[in-house]
Length: 288
Image (tube, rainbow, N blue to C red; front, side, top):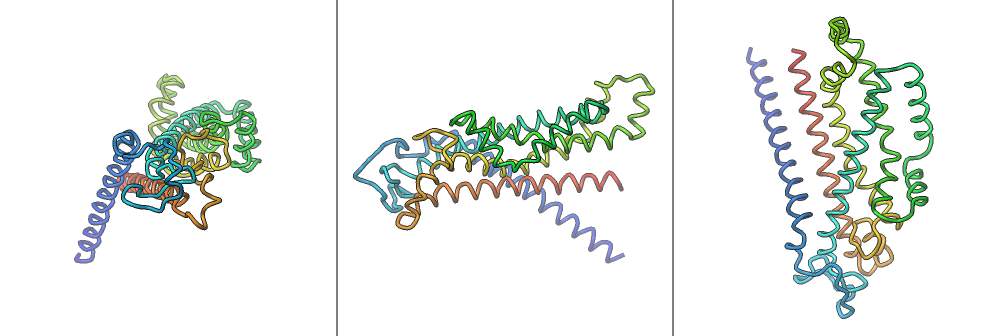
């Protein structure tokens, strides 16, 4: 009896800590997106575009917290301004790939037959190429620019959600409650919206939340290669590309955007893990 109480207390304690971590991550991400990204013009006290040849490669100081780059621009201000391009572009890409890929996977899995076969063969063709290599090729064909870089990532990202959504649909559509809905005269649209999507949405959201960090790295990689935001627009990947030749004698030029990227990716990955744990806990409660 005592052992059961101890186990129950530990489980409750872990659940409370997980809930606190989830709320803390949500607050940190909202602050990061809302305050830092959107309020950058009011937080940064230096003009990120101002070229000052008298302050070239200045080390970090009170005036320039992250130092200056090869053109005398404040790295700290450019990191703050670049957060909007880096974070919001990744969120938009994930939202589009999540929606597009999930819809294709749901329709493919539910309809089945020839449509499902054709869709899966198209997905296999896309997956036959290394994702980043294909993204570089698509971005190179479309040309530079943030919008084209986003389209390149979308072109390779939808297949993941299609395969996952299809697998869930194939599993769910054979359940007894789906058969009962069909026998009661419910149409396919009703069944998909009322039964299939609600039962798979949580798992798809977990996948999307875990994919935000990966998408940010992919977007920054394209920017690093000069296939994203054109200069002098601040973007973390492009800033690291500019500073790579100065890493030995002015490491702050590349460390500023690099550390910002790492911190943001870790936060979103922790958020995804926490959401997954919460959904697993909810699923276990339902099973009991």
